[in-house]
Length: 360
Ligand SMILES: [Zn+2]
Image (tube, rainbow, N blue to C red; front, side, top):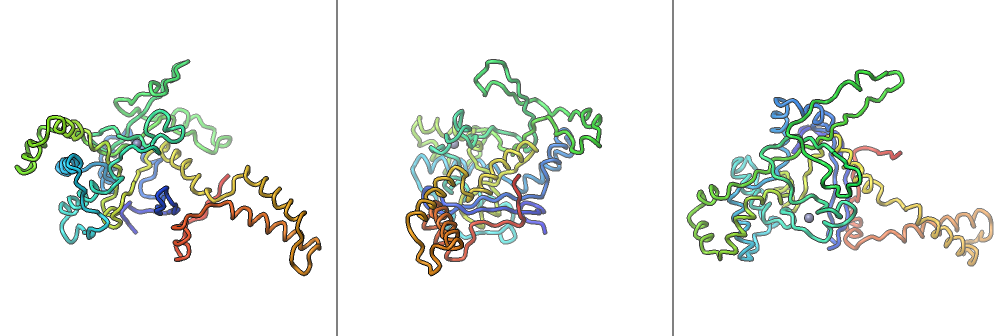
């Protein structure tokens, strides 16, 4: 059946606790328009246009300019917008599509985290060393579509930022390698060497035109601002779509909290996402390095103390005793937050998967 992300075939989701102890989930959804297809059509303008309009119905990365203006005014005046989670969800069938999008945009602007603000976690890991690891603010884009990135690694150049550029247009795939392939010795085709990234529409805002078209009440409010705040508003407004974290309007309406609905795009993007996901798919496994001290500790315990069971001292009991100590050692090492524990007691699963995964 068709859903908010089109026709999907598989889902993998995990529930985690964040630093402030609230539960949140990560989900990967397969199906809809596959990465291989998005990669192969990138140089065909007519198909790109059709596909982009479908993707625009799944993901939104921009807000209407008047919502941005109100959001900035709220920020300047330190006004807390109404909490989306306490607002009633609305549906396009009840109030019409335009009113639905307007309602959803107000919520998005008011939801903490839906407009990206840098925090200390932005600089975590190796991706955080160069810039915000979530790549915010995002580059502005007049329409949803593919971009081709070319890497031009210079010898001795340690500044990774200067070694790539975005091409003006997409170069069609070089098919020669595929055509020359001996299918009996190379059953898997060579992968496409082009690095293509699909980006969502995020327009730059034409500040003067937008301010001209605002309601008189809002215009007066802007006029009353100090010069410094007015300059800040103009400067931020132009590029504020770069801070919008991609969302799906129906999902935002249903959940009323911050979400990040990312299109995984081309083959390269899908691969990167899978490397990221594997950590989550295997997160509960005990790292090999942790196993040895646990086993040694169990061995020491079994050697020093006798089991309380009736058959204590027999080979069978000693083995069971030893194995039980190891299992207890491992589960004792996993940290479970109180919220995770409560969710588990209420019967909420920490992982949902439509399929079984193997790791090789
Ligand atoms: Zn950031």
